[in-house]
Image (cartoon, rainbow, N blue to C red; front, side, top):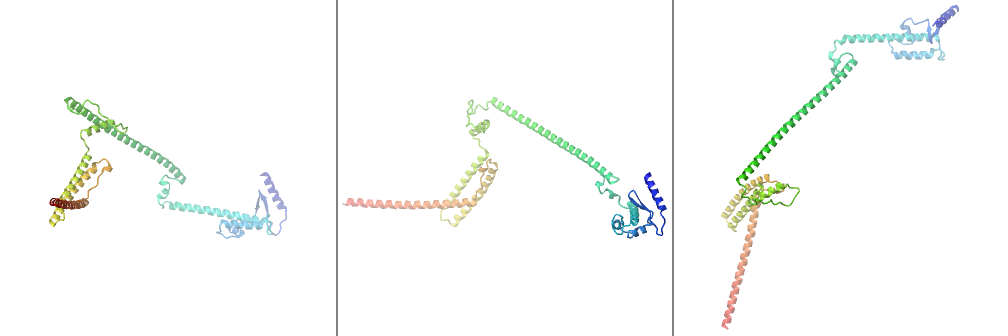
Length: 373
């Protein structure tokens, strides 16, 4: 700093010793790599005029104009119009314009902030809560931190709620299992009580001698062919039931259905054979009545088939309904074929009888001829 001050004083002394001329001489020197001049623009209008600009231009226009003028007047540009004094004035004007524009921008920002402060009370108060789910207060960064903490708290509450619901479900399931165990224990107790009652009844019957008249008393039970898929106790019980004439309900119903349809068919065939062939109008009326009765009995039999299909344990053993019309036509065909056979037998019989009579006559004539001879 001391050296710079000495240099500055030396320069000023040298300038004082130089004689003055008519034209003003611009005194300038280099200070820390900057060109300084004692001639500065007086106001902002002069600065705009030096930069060949108008007031109200943009910052880019100012920079572009300064760049173009620097290319023309900078001492190191090598152009024909290079002038250090003019370049110093241009640089000072450029800095004045920049400071003016910066101040102007700051003042406009302050005015905008003041206007925002004025209208802040008029805007709806809930506008600031449209983000972050309306959580928090203060600046956006503060509200963001508050919102993150809110999310953490909410997640922990959800985890606690999930654990609570899980424990409640486990409690309900344990109560249901306990109730199921209680029901099963009651069922087991009832079963055991029934078994004890049955055993007591069997022992009482044995004491009274109700089992003395059973066939095969004192003899071992006969076993069937050994089958690993059949329980021997169940097999022996089924054998005892079969030996004593026990039959399941579906077998009895099946037997009843077969016997009933056979009887109905025989009755219908008998009634048709009684009417004979050909049938008169009265016989046709009787045949229609018998057919109607047969149809009603078939309908009742079909209801019995429905009962059979409900109790039969094997699906392949189920039966289909009988069709009354088909049964009647079958009976008529069988009757016609039987009548045809009967007529054929009668014709054969008459032919045989006629042949026998002719043989007798021929033998009689032969005997008479022999006697007369």
